[in-house]
Each structure stands twice: as C-alpha cells, then as structure tokens.
Length: 357
Image (cartoon, rainbow, N blue to C red):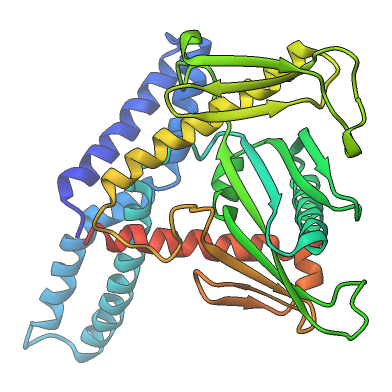
C-alpha cells in the first residue's frame, strides 16, 4: 500500500506545475524542464486521484451491501461495482508504484556500445559482426544516430572489436539490458561435417557521460602517442597520430588510432574513457545499494551469459527471463527486438516493485 501522503504530494506537485506553467513568468529553459515534468506527472494524475478516492468509494458500496433492508438488485450492482473497483485499484497501485520508483538518471542518456569477439576464433568475430549489424538495423528503425568510434576487423571479414556511439531518445534505457555474453550455436561455413559450433561475443552498453557528469583531472591521465598500425603490421600513418589514454587511479586504458588526426583520436578516446569511468562509479554505487538483493536481470556483468542465438532451431533465448522467440532471423533484422526488450524491462520493473514490499 502506498502512503496517502505520498499520493497527495504528487497531486499537489501537479497543481503547482500547472500554476507555474500558466503564470507566464518563467524563462524558456525552466519552462521546458517544467513542461517535461508536468507531462510525466499528468500521465498518472488521474490514477492518483482515483487512488485517493478509493477508500471512500469502497465504504459507500460496502454500506449498500451491509444494509439488511436494502434492495437485492441494488446489492448485486454494488457487488459488481466493488469487484471492478478493487481490480482497478490494484492496477492503479501498480502504475503509481512504477511511477514512484527511483529513476535511473542515465536512462535518458545516449549510449556507447562495445562489441568484442569472444571464444570461438574466426566464427566469434563473424558473430560479433552479426550483432553489430543487428544494432545498426535497430538504430535505423528507431531513427537513432549510430556513429562509429573505432573498429578492428578479423581476417574472415568479421569484427574483433567495434565501439560505436548511439544517439536518440532514451537510448540507454532501451539498450542497457544488452550487456553481457551473447552465445551463438550454428554450423560455420568452413565446417565440412555439418557440426554445430558454439562461439560467443561480449556486449557492453555504457551511458555516454558528459563532462558535467564526471570530473577528470588532467593530472590523473597519462597520454602516450604512437604510430598507428594496420593489419599485418603495415603502417596506417607516418605520423604519431595514435593515442593511448590511461587513467592512473583506476588503471583503465583506452587506445584510439582510427583517425589520422591525433587530436580526433584523443577526443574519441576521452569519450570512451569518460563513459567507462562514469559506469564504474555507477556500478560501485549500485552494489552498495543492492548488496542484499539478487535480480534475474543482473547488473550488466559482462561475464554473465545472457542470450543464446541457436541457428539450427531458429530461436533466440534470453536466459535471465527464460524467454524464447522462435524468430531468430526476424530478431537479427531488428524486427522482434522490441518484444525482447519490453519483456526484460517488465521483469526489471517487477523486481524493483517486489523490493518495495
């Protein structure tokens, strides 16, 4: 049960926001912020008012039901109305609890996605490439902007590693459950006996941190420059344009050599480093908050096996929520991606709600 005071404060907040927005004495930036806040609260305000009115409405109906001299037909109507009222109240309570859950400040941020080939040799690099193409297709369908930061190709035409930035609305909240080990089971093109091989790729999704999110002291950085090298050791550039940035306190290190400009490589490297440090600090805080709470969804641990893509059976299975979709090709085309994400989000919400009880 949600304390009545909490709901009353929500209703008061809605009224105050409405008053502020209609006053005309507010600057553009604040108006935009309050408008967004008002829109969020406005979606739930009807449910909040019904939640407050529930006890009185319930008492009125129970009064009719407990009246021994009352009309039986009226009592039947009251009983039906009471059943509907209780059902609606349960739904309203769940919606309000979800709304009142602490918001993840990173959910509305853009994201940096890192995909690395894992166990399985060349087949793993081909699978890493398939995963990247899937996220490209999802981005295109959702009208997100995907920008390549760095890429390292394998001899088989796959990807050893790829890092990209994805920009749009609520990117991190949509993609954050993708972090972990993705496993593939299929017959490689090079397999002559028709045997199914298992290989894997690791996905890491980080909220893209801005300078205001994290202060990095120059004295904590060691920056090394070197000559970029291409496949087989060939020289990509004749100048020292490649950059390695090391954050001394944590030991985190980022190398960038995709650009011909040292300045551009450093900027890309700092973007990745800042996001990794931001996620490191978020993980530390999350662990402090949830020492006693285990979740099925997990914490984005990159060593956790989260999903299997089985080509012979045409299925994709998410092991955290035991959901199997027999639409593997559709999933890799980005068509069934939302169904998986919605199920993961719902499970995460259910776990958050159970922790409030």
